[in-house]
Amino acid sequence: MERITSVPGSTYFYYPRLVCVVGVLDQAKETCNFAPVAWATPLSSAPPLYGVCLSPRTYTHKLVLQAGEFTINFMAHDDAGIVAAMGKLSGRLTDKVKELGLALDPPDALRTPTLARAYASAECLLVARHQLGDQTLFAGEVHSIRHRPEAFDEAGVLRPERVAPLLYLGAGRYLSADPASVVSPAGTG
Amino acid sequence: MERITSVPGSTYFYYPRLVCVVGVLDQAKETCNFAPVAWATPLSSAPPLYGVCLSPRTYTHKLVLQAGEFTINFMAHDDAGIVAAMGKLSGRLTDKVKELGLALDPPDALRTPTLARAYASAECLLVARHQLGDQTLFAGEVHSIRHRPEAFDEAGVLRPERVAPLLYLGAGRYLSADPASVVSPAGTG
Image (spheres, rainbow over the protein chains, first blue to last red):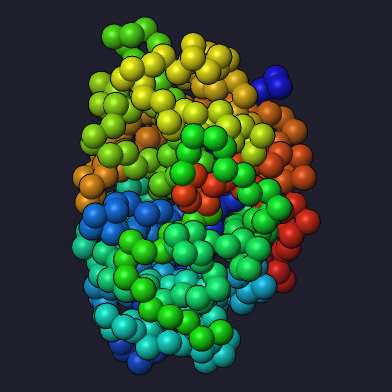
């Protein structure tokens, strides 16, 4: 159990992380752009806020500022290839919806479509943004959720034996959760 | 693939998430408090920033404001029980280090110890905080990392076949990653 010391930047200690695909309207091109983000987190329960980190150098960052809203889309492990392709292509140069043949669901509450193949999606209205180092944290208020009915149990908890969520491991590698490893330690829940 | 619509708060669509145990000095009690947090994310590469969300009602929130720094500690799946116990006990009433018999490693760069059993830990200096809904996002600059040497490969990427990271699924349930599911889609990395 002896541990060694290393410097920041040398170790991706914070992975694996659930991949969040950010969808945002590209009004000039009359399409929607989708970009995978691993640096994202729920921020608040009431109101329900979800935050995504984007570099100011990205096209997605510019589009979120213009649109004032975005969607978040959670994909199954089977979609690792399509998610990697979304991250590789630039929305500046490519209409990813056409290029990747993405099927969209219409929005329920706001204006931005969601990815039909996502096991869960949410529509978020941009309510705050903070510059933190080399990224901007965009905080969106969740207005509506769309999900595959079999993906979550009656308590709203993911069923990993039904849906294998896509996690990012770093360095272009992805993996999923192990449904056989679920435990409920005493005294919680 | 038909999806249904639900309202915010009904579905924990954002899990599973890597558990981050926040360590913070309790100077009055001459101990260190440890609390598991699932709402946490890297925020920036340069400088390296990591953010954790804490409710202003928690004892840990008060301690972070007092100390001006904290550590983050990433645990193996085997530690689900001890992590659940950390979440159940209150640092207001209990010295969790004594109660749970936690072995600590001394800090390398700042003043706050890390959990010796964590496969990776980092020392963070508080550099910003933002109130976002019912939580405060504390942003810490990573000053030093300690990790088990076998946990990460030469690129600094977690070896899930060596270390089973502890992920939170919601409703008191935990699980881990599936090392057999690692994929590297073409064109990434």
